[in-house]
Structures are given as structure tokens and as C-alpha cells.
Image 1 (cartoon, rainbow over the protein chains, first blue to last red):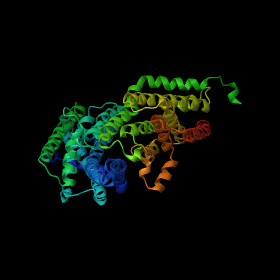
Image 2 (image 1 turned 90 degrees about the vertical axis):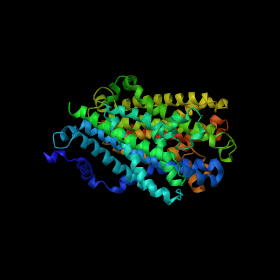
Image 3 (image 1 turned 60 degrees about the vertical axis):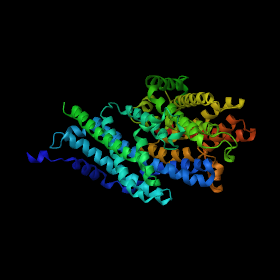
Image 4 (image 1 turned 120 degrees about the horizontal axis):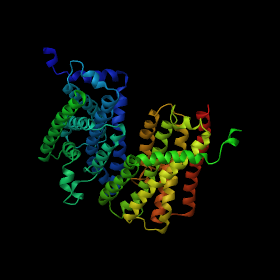
Length: 256
Length: 262
């Protein structure tokens, strides 16, 4: 039975690529870039001008850009592993069909996470090119921003995959937005941690998006600091925990 | 003359159906229509506002929070008007759902439209009232004219709801609605003077923005809240938004008849 012992998560990725083969790749890129780009122009440049004239706008846009890069990676990771996976899990019963084949539940979970990381990294990479093109990147360390985006996408894909197993009804997915939107707005996306009262700072610092932003902001501005290693550890732990939880929860749902 | 035989007050029957439905699942709608704009008010207005000086010329000498809050009210009201019209109308018009079933009874297409439009107006007003309550609690509305900001915001939302209703009833499925939100609502939301003053834009872009309905809603709400409103300006903004609502309603009347009584 050697065949069944081989991990086969890549089959899920290949299946999604096959389904998407007629979807034009630039659609994917535009979808990932359009919304963060609008925020960058409106909040980054528009409000940036109010903060300290035109000189301030340049500095402020460079401050906001890496945060929007992290948000873009997070949002597309969550969109991939929640909306689409919920549909396959609860509505299409796609995984119920798959577990009758040599693929294991772990293959399903890891395959979905890998497919999500792939798409999310693609849109983050496009956004990275856009902000670099606008001169909002100030260091060669930004070359490491792409692998960092993979890590961010991995952590949020795994967490999203674990979270979606809990959601029974389609419209309950909006409760995820209750977590995602405050995180987008408060995880130092638009202003530094020092704006918050001292008591609130540890709470904000505990958010996974805050850790992702710390990592990417350090790399694109070139201000490296030990906190970035903490962020890497945090995201790796989140990815491992999310993957483990997703596999465990899916096993309960698919193999009663 | 089928309408002559139809009993009066049929539009209210459809309104009551919408209201009954809402009473059963209002909790879910709170997230999008109330929590979302309030979070933006706190995060951007109060949080980011601390980085903006209070004497910036482009803002007219008021604090960033005072500048942002009424703009956000108008933008949130637009979003609520679209959320109340786009998805529900295109959903209800599908085979076997509320619209085709209702028009098989003594309700006429125009009754269905009137009832649903009334419900949209009520929902938009509820969302605006919740936002206004928080805005007033922040103490940014300094003028007695601010009492008029609630109807102004509700009109902004309703002006968007009507044309979208006219459009959504013609749709075969909901996918174009997502395209509308992504390519029309988002740019309007971010560039109609809500987040920053339109005077910061290049002159050509300023003229373009002044044509968009959201800009008129933002200006109307902002001048009323800050007490800088003029009769001419306020009437012009109100006339623009009312004309948009009326044109949308008339188009919706025609489209409802065509699509529900083919």
C-alpha cells in the first residue's frame, strides 16, 4: 500500500489550477491589486498630504504601503480558504467525494492551504511590484518581502481553513468580517502603535495582522529590528496550529 | 384596467413582508450596515485624525474627525442604499422567489416596487440614525443645522438605492452586483471627498468628482454638520439627489412592469 502513504496534497492544487485554466491570470492580479491600490491612493496619498504637506505624503504613503501589502495577502488568503472552501465542504460535498479516494483528510487540508497560498502570493507579488514602481519601497531588503508574503499567506490560509470548519451556515461567514475588518483598521495599518494608550498596545501587538505588518514594514523600509524575528515565529506558529486544527476538524466532519 | 380591480394599500403588504423578514434576521445586517461605518469612524476619524493637525487649510480649519465624520455618514448611507437594493432585488426577482410570486396575487409590479422602496428608505434611515447618534456623541456636530443631517444622509442613500433597484431587477444573476461594488462603489467611497478634501486633487479631477452623486451627498452632510451650509448650495445638492432618486424610481417602475409581467 505504498501509494496511499504518499502525501498527495499537490493533487488538490493541480485540480484548482485545472479548473482555473480558462480564468485569465491578469483578472486574478487586477482583483488582488485594485482594492489595496485605491486605499493607498486615498488614505496613503490623500490623507498623507494632510499630515505634513507633500513631503509628509511621501513618507506616509511609504508607511501605509507595506501594511496594505500585508492586508492584501491576508484578505486573499481568507477569501480563498473561507468562501470557496465553505462551498466545497458544505454545499458541493466535494471533500466527501475525495475522502473515498486514496487522498487523506490531511491532503485535503494541506492542498487547500497550498492552493490558497499560491493565489494569495500571486496577488501580493503584483501589489509589491506596484508599490515598488511608485517608489514606496526604500530598501533592497524588500526582495525578502515576497517570501514574507508567502509566510503571511500561509498563516492566514491555515487559520481561515481551521475557522471555516466551524461555520455551518453560509451567511454566518459575515461574522468573520467582524474579526477581519477591525483587524484591518486597528493593526497599525494607518498609524503607528504609539497612537494607542499604553494599556491597549499589547492587545494590538497580539493581532496576527500587526505581526505581519511589522515584518513587511521592516523589510520595505529597511529598518530591521529583532521584533521581525518574533513576527516570523508568530506566523510560523499560527500556520502550524491552523493546519493542525484544520486537519483535525476536517477529520471529524468527513470521517464520522 | 387590471389596476382598477386591485385593492388599495397593496404596496404596504410587500413592505410588511420585508419588515417581517428583517425582524427575523436583523442581527446579521447590523454587522455590515452599522458596525462597519462606526469602525471606520473610530479607526480613521479618531485614530488617524490624531496625526492630522487641526489647522490644515484644506479641511477648512476644523479637526480631521469633524471633517471626516459627516463625509463617512454620507458614504455609509450610499453603501447602505446599495446593499439594501442590489442584492435583495436581484435575489427576489429570481423564479419562485418573492417578486414573481407576489405579482401572481392581486399585487401589481408597481405595488411590489413601492413596498420594497419604502422598506429601503426605512432601512437607510435606520442606518443613518445609528451613525448620527454616535457622531453627535463624539461632539463633532456644532451647528443647529446638524439636525437636518439625518434626512440629508437618508436622501443620499435613497438616491443610490433607486437607480440600482431599476438595474438589479433586470439581472439574470447576482454576479454583476459584485462587479458594481468593486468597480463603482469602492472608488466613489474612497475618492468623493470622504477621506480627504477634493481641493487636494488636480483641477480636472475636482470637476469630475463634483459630478458624482456621492460628492453632493458628502458636501450636503458636511456643510450642515459644520454649519457652513448655504441655501443655494444645499438646494442644489438636494435637487441633484432628489432628481437621481426620482429618475431611478421612474425607470424602476418601467423595468418592474417589463420583467415581472413579461
